[in-house]
Length: 117
Length: 111
Image 1: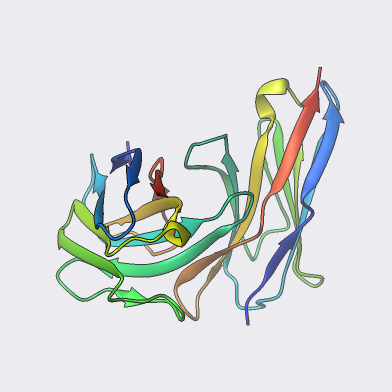
Image 2: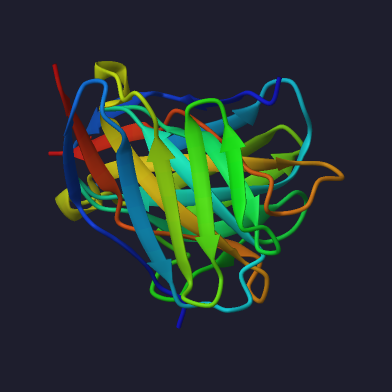
């Protein structure tokens, strides 16, 4: 149980276009989903915390107009990278906390590798 | 601010024990985790420990917590080549309700 999927698993896009990444909890409902970014050989950096039905909370230094997060249902959160640039190329990982579970219980998706050319 | 530090690289021979160390700064951390990441994949939770515990053992994995020194370690007994991966130490920060990750320790197991 507690499986989180991401789609797509990898994407290549041209500079200036927008890309949407989906994060789904497959066998549970998630009150809270987290979006992380991971640069090569580096740690995960929390970008934002997404709660169903409300606006996401962004970490300091993360542009909310560039990284649009929508948590429209208890099983789906999306991250849209708008007007992507090569420096946005990274590995994006989401995690989800089941309804009724404390925030320290997180289940991670497999990640989405974004390459902007 | 909160910070989690770990050594970046560890190399061991197959069959030996591996010990990966981590230090953290946030004294209000209540949960500390070890995650495993294989190339190109997401994170797999290996184990976690509550801050009121000193040790936790789960099959080949032993976690030791020294809360006074804010030091966490992961020992992998009888290390196998399949254990080669990046291991992340992480703390759950109760103040901000978020998880802070270390930079990851790359474990290389030699056959």
